[in-house]
Length: 218
Image (cartoon, rainbow, N blue to C red):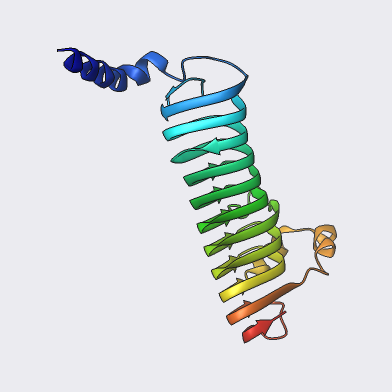
C-alpha cells in the first residue's frame, strides 16, 4: 500500500506539475542553483539567471546559465562556463566549453564546442552576420557567422566568412557573394586580410589560390 501511494504521488506530480509550476516553482531573477525535470517542472522559472550550477533530468530552460550546466538537454539564452549534455542549445551567445552530441549556438560562440555536430550562427539576420571565435571539434562543424578560429572534424563548413584553420576530410569556406552583399564597404575592408587555411582531402575556398584543391588550400 505504501509503495502504491508513492508511485501514485510521482505520477500525479508529473501529470499536474506543469499546471502547478507553470513556469517554475519560484520566480527569481538570480539563483546559484537550478534543478529541472522537464520545463516548466523546475525550481526556478524560465526567466531566471542561474549563476553556479544547473542540473537537468531531461530538459530545463532558463534565460542564462553561468558556471556548470549538466543535463540531457540544456537550453538557455546566454551561456558561460562548462556545458555537458546530449544537446546544448544556446539562443544567443555561448562562452566557454560546450561538450555534447549536438552543440548549437544560434548566434555566436566564444570558446570551444566539442561534439558530433557543432553549429554557430544562423546566417544573415537583419542584414547582419554575428561574430564568433574559438574552436569547433566534431564530426561536422558548421559556422554561419563571421568566424575566427579553428575547425577540426570530418566536415568543416563555413557559409559566411572564416578566418583561421580548417582541418578535416572536407573543408568548405563558401558563399562569399552573399556575405559581400550584406556588409558595407567599411566592414568588407575589416575582413580583406582574413585568411582561411585548409588542410584536408578536398578543400573548397572561393578566395583560395584554387576554388577547389586537394590536400591544402588558402
